[in-house]
Length: 207
Image 1 (cartoon, rainbow, N blue to C red):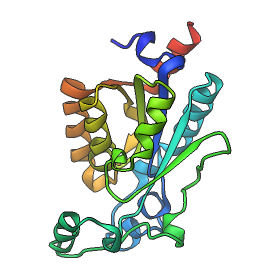
Image 2: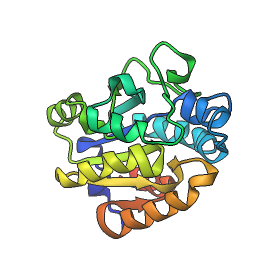
Image 3: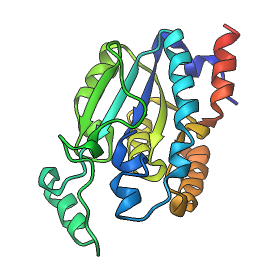
């Protein structure tokens, strides 16, 4: 059961992972080229906006991330795996609409991290921010559950952070919801405190 210590505003941060057009929009590459139904991802946007507002009301820092999934920027091992796919597809290329945020973006008080790997910790800036702010707890939200969110979550857990996941604020395309469900089950068993966003907001209200 979640307790206030795990979401204490004094040492908690919120990560909003990869809410970008190519991953989330019906006009993005995942939808148009890979023919995935991104409706489940779009369904988290409105509640995520509300949750971010509640988070900022608690003076909790917010970090937005954006992914560059372009083989030109990948490390060799990632490029080899990428190119072994039957239909490799560069996604979220800088200076394209697909790289832009989808219906949500950081404000002047938020942090932003650009990454070239699924794991947000691959950019050293993340840990610099966490250490500077003396963060102990990380609330993870965003896209996609079994890819960038999972990669970041496991590293956070390994590094000793308490990880909290509002399960209604992570998602992935409809065709991959079996991965979403399996990933959340694993998190709940081993790596994270999986709750509903309303439970977090309610605990903040009890302070």
